Image (tube, rainbow, N blue to C red; front, side, top):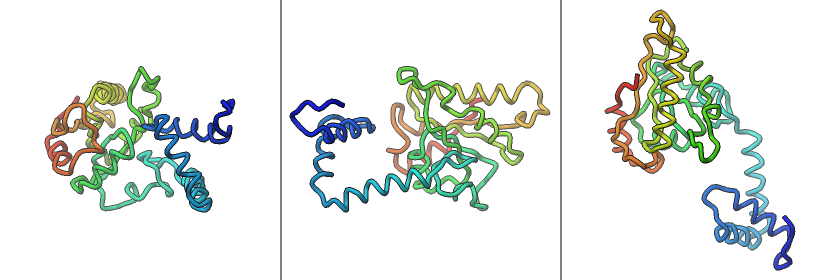
Length: 213
C-alpha cells in the first residue's frame, strides 16, 4: 500500500492486514496496531510466533475436518464417542460450543463454510464429497445437520440433504439406504448463532431434532 505520508508505510501495511480480519474495521485496526507498537517488543513478537506455530502445526482432521495438531483429532480418536452419529456443523466454534454444553457424545463433521452467494461461497466450499465419504462409513447410522437457523444456514442444510440423497440413491441396498438424516430442532432461535447459545438451548435443540429426508 502506498504511504500517504501521514504515517509510516509499514504502519499502513499493518493496518491493512488487520482490517482483513473478520469484524475488524479501521478504528479497531488502528487501536490494535498502536497497541502492538506500544507493548514490549517481546510480547508483540510472541504473538507473531504463536500465529506462525499455529499455522505450522494445526491442520484439518482427515475425518471431521476440525482443526487439530494430530490426525485423527482427539475427538475422532476417542473410543468412547458414539461413532454411529455424525453432527454436521458450520465452524469449529460451533463444535466447541456444543462440546461445552456437555450433552453430545457423537462425532462431528465441520463444513468450514456455509452457502453465501453474496460472498462467493458455493457448494464446492462445503466439502460435500468428504461428507458423503464420512456418511458411507459402515458404523454411521445418523447424520444430524447442525447448521445455524438463519437464511444461509437453511440453504446450506438443503444442499447437504440433497448431496446425501444423491449418494444414497433409490437402491435400498446402497450403504446409505438406511441412513437417517436429521436436523437440529428449532430450539435454537432463528437468526441466532450456535456459538452464542447457552447449554440449555443447545440441549433442547438436539433432543428435538427431526428427520430431514
